[in-house]
Length: 425
Image (cartoon, rainbow, N blue to C red; front, side, top):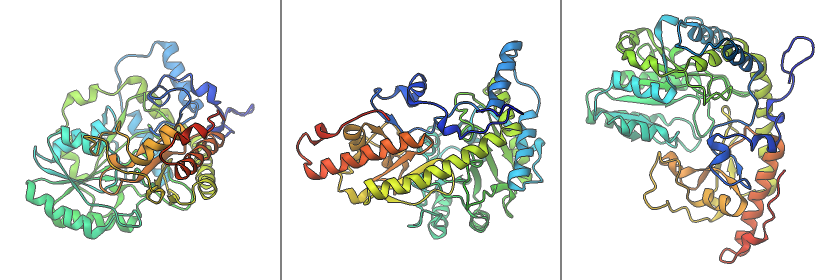
């Protein structure tokens, strides 16, 4: 992946590793299912480490630099990246705190700004841990479903904020920016409207911005804390999704100017959760991983176009809106006529549950996708596909899916799946 001249990466990271090499990995993506399954479900990418990240880790290991973390280099690197990429020039390192990961950081922030029993609003369908983690923290979830265009429905959000006020003194809104699973990148005017509603209802906003670096051509990321009216809000982010660092734990909580006093109340023990190696890796990614990220974004852009072509050919009745960001595709399978009943006990947030199309594609096509029902209201009958893989794997997966649907529709009550030929790309 490196140029012989200056060491800069030159190749699309999604095309570097073979399927055989990927199957040597021991992470959940590659070990949850048998080896004949193509795993396009959990948010891990089929890429090698960015060279600058690998170099930082190698240097630390060579030095035995595996002790406790220290300093503000991570926040400084994020600030530099945010200024360059998003025009966020008033980012303040002193209004940040290192947390173990984005979801744990969200829980800790919610504990600062809400009380047990208070309501937390989410825009469904949305990332399943929003439901699970909020519930485990003894807060209740109120949904404000997205509109038919998969964007924030301000009328629904207004009503959800009103209801949230009925359940407790200090409600919050857990924003997903960009939105997982739809890939929508919220516009500045949309976020300004959110801030206005939150102010009118006395709702604190906590913005999950873990996918922020993964905005594709045609869209622009707006950090929520740069929006007028967001001064008392929080954002959580890391390099985890953009540089494939989920196993290297470290994230940042960022407070708006009127939320700094709340951040100062963060329990000291929270800062003991992040890994020193994780902080080194995330810092290197934000500080020097821009070229690698740009190559990745070009590859993801090409893959979202390829997916559109593949679906038109093999699954024309599946609905698809090109994601503006993330590496996730939200596929509407309601036109396939597949039973979408939830499994017994299936609830939003329980990501291990499969139902309807996701179960069928796993059983008949040997393609693992995320089942839409775990994303909450509006998710039933959908699947989430992770397109951060090679064009060859993506092509093989959608081809298999098309064969599976054709076989089921031809003979839904027979062993039609015996006619599907599974082979590795």
